[in-house]
Image (cartoon, rainbow, N blue to C red):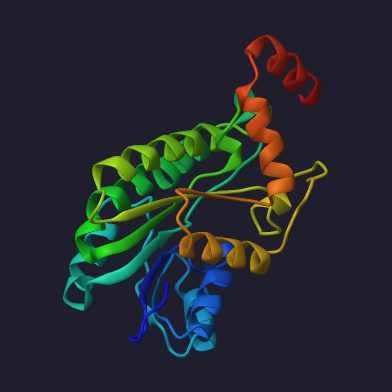
Length: 245
């Protein structure tokens, strides 16, 4: 992401975690930002750290809010990049999950990202980027990770489709992080290998966006192991996963 004029970037899910770290890193590089998330107070605090970035509060889980935001921002388009990091996460076994929390995760993680994929491309300049956050949790059906893992597997698949459908006008990128120290991973009660900070994650995302590869995954000492497991036959991987469960 380079050029003489300031980059214009819209970050959806900016209020905390990787989204907030990306916001600060992009402002340090001279970008002009629009910040979106549900928590308007957190966005206001972040905007103060980001040179008075524009705030557009929205909840991806609420029908119509993203469409209204796109209508509001259409006059300010085109954007050089639109980045969607928004997600909900509740770990647990499928049988133990509250149905209302499952519905909320599907609405935000999957249906919300589908709305981003449907509504945001017209706001991106020719050759600009749409960056969707899947997860390494979408590589395999890990015990205790549902339905989060299922929604992220769907996003991984969606990004692959979009990379073909929107090319060459929009450059679609898929981000698949490993464990990052955020308020989401604070819910985990197990040891998280190769965990990194949101700032380290933001650096990896921006480095990937500047490169040519479709998928941006990190830290590689962890993600490459999961990629190798995904290539193995179920006869080998399922017994390993049962041990984890």
